[in-house]
Image (cartoon, chains in turn green, orange):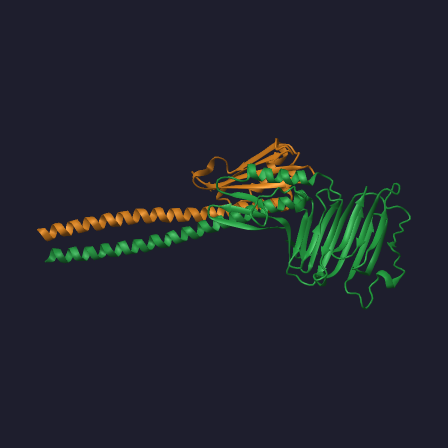
Length: 299
Length: 145
């Protein structure tokens, strides 16, 4: 009888130990899973960020977000073969970043792989405000801010600073064409449906011209020609309107560094390239548009 | 006598179970601790690389000799916690993806322990002006043999 009691007691202790151990293993496994998930998520995020930042570098464009302002720094035309550099970046990622444990893939909205150097991708969308910053191709001889009439209301003001590499033709005498002395034609009136407040500054580092706070009817074409030395063949053209082509900057045999500040009526926006970046690891996946916004806390 | 034998059997079974539980729990505990350590090392290493990249450190290295880059790389690695040791290898590629230059540095020397917990981090960088791309391989492990 005594033996049975001992046996039963030991059996109960044994069962208790098994239960305890089972619970311990379960908790440990859960903890390990959480840690592995965190490692995978962080790795996926870091890889995504690194690859996306390289796209902006190779396109030689930077987007900064400061509350309600999207600031774009660009150079027109491209000084390098941007299309080739984007392809180089994509090939380098395939060869030296992708492995069995992680994959970075550029794709369109349907999931098909895209070639980054393709001209169809030379477009940056500012969402959800419906503003596009586009180049006709990666040679970037002109840039255009495009917005539909419906989304125009999201833009409060645009500050465009152009710094020309070549010297401005002297005397610096830049006129809006057609002549804005006729206010009823291109300057906003009380009844203008789409009125753009534009601060345009042009400088070559020494000479300076600006049209502070001009209000132009975005439904009509208004243009400025900025002549550069030497001769008349070099110039930069700035055109406002008609919508959806809100603001166009075009270089003709000249080079210009542009700084464009689009002041929006919201701070909730994102700047994304057309292509999506799909980062996949055995434990996680991140597929989103290639974001360019860098949050700037200080001016 | 039969009760005694049964008790002995049960005791042996219990002891065996206890031993197994003890060994397995230690192994599981160590593997979990290892994951935490690896996560910590990966985070620390990625943070270091992010800071270096945000300062354009890698782009500035392009074109410089390893005798200049090596000590600078070491000074960055030396900011890691004292319990870590690390090595970094940067390969710069030309437009045709041929190797332009290779830079490397290691911190912690022979006391690195790559038999237990270690983390390997891969990062890429691009440089527009000089039309180059780069690959960074970083291995972080614990110090001690």
